[in-house]
Structure formats: structure tokens, C-alpha cells
Image (cartoon, rainbow, N blue to C red):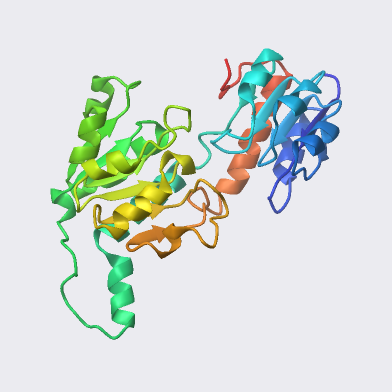
Length: 319
């Protein structure tokens, strides 16, 4: 294969050693930019044979200038910042890396759920105020009496179910694209959308962001849930109407929420969720472990090389 140019539009990694190793071994050159706008991407990507993208906006305008690009790879699972339809129209495959942090995200989702189910944040805060009390302030069922539910039944959701299996509770999932028998093999009951919200004691979201799933959790759905229910979101921020979620927490419609991703990031200082009761919020860190970063970088670079060699792609989004 002749020498090719791979442009990294932007990144936040300590170094690009893994990309350099993989792409260099394949005879390629890595060109690094730190673009923040579509216009900057358009300039940096001129003459690129492939793009590696983290957060920079790769919209239709930027894609229009890609005259020899053979593949765009997004670092991570989400791809909201890449116009996949525009890329498809130009015949450019867009890929993500959905399998680099499966266990880490599932761990984080389950950790948020368990902390809220055992009311650890509120009990800790109460004790720090000088209140010693050996019972919780709110109802606390045993985990084995609770129903753990996921919206979605992909890699991360299945990993979360596997982790929750040891608590012996009921496990259910909503995913119209996964057959009943596949869930049954994992000991999970397939349910419809209405049952998901009414039956869940813990509802963990593991859906992609689409026009149909935006505000999947909204005021109407929150009103259907048990007042003891907990919601967890480690997937995509806009899956939840966070203003409606804040109101539900304040009104005691639900018991708690563990949120790692938000509609706007960083979460604005004046966002009402910051002061909502029983909200455990983290700063989009579910993906992280000491090994997940190099894994992500290596897998993304390997997908780029497959694209440039016209080999079968593992994770093309816009087929």
C-alpha cells in the first residue's frame, strides 16, 4: 500500500503512540490537529486519506472537502459530531469504536445504581452533618427484591445484566431489535416500552441517540415510574429531559438518578440538576480506566488501516 495521510482532527490523549505504531507499521503518516470548528476541520483534512475524530464537528461542509478520504473513525461509541448521512452520500464509511470500554461503562452504571439503591450519598451527607441514625430516611428494598431494567440490550447492557445477576433480583430489558430467546439465554425477560417504565426499580439507559430516542425519558414517562425507582444514564445525555428529571426528583416522583452524560457538556453551573435531591452526577467518566484509553486508541487506528486497505470494517455505522 502506498503512503497515506491520516489526520487526527483533535484529541485529548496524553500521546498518540498507539496510533503512530499501528499506522506507521502500515506505511502511513499521522498528522495531528486540534480543531474546534468545522472550518478548522475542513482546512486540516485537506488531502487526508482518513480521519480520526474525537470531539471536533465533522459536518457536511467539512465532508464536502474530503476528495480522497476513504474512512472516518470516531474515537468512542457516540458519533453525534459526525454527519454520517453526508459521509454516506460521498461514499465515505464512518466507524465508531463501541467495544473499547464495555466493561468500564457497565461498571459505572452498576456502581451508580448500587450507590443510589443503598442510599450511600444521602446517608454519607447525613452523617457528616452529625446525624447518627441506623435506618435510612427513605424506603430501601433489598436488591434481591428489585427489578433491574435496561433500555437497550447491546454489549454494555448485557455486561451490566451479568454484573447484576449475582444479586438475584428480577432482570428485564426493552430492545425491539433483540429477539426474546436471546434475552432468555441471559436470564432476562423481554418487555415492551410501557412495562419497562412501570416495572423498573432500577432503569439503566443503554440506547443510541436518534431522533426517536431523544428525551426517551421525559415528564410523562417519569410519571409512570414507581416513586422508589432509580434512573441511571451512562449512554447519551439527550436520552433524558434533565429539566423534567430534576422536577421529578424534587417532587419525589422517583427515588434517585445517577447521571454521567448530559445534554450540554460540561454541565452548566446553573443547571437545576446540580441542586436536585438524590441526584448522583459524574463528569462523563464512565468510559475511563487505565487500560481503556490505549485500547481505544489502538482499536481506532486498526479500523483506519482496515479502511485504507479496503478490508472489511468492524464497526461501520453508515452502511
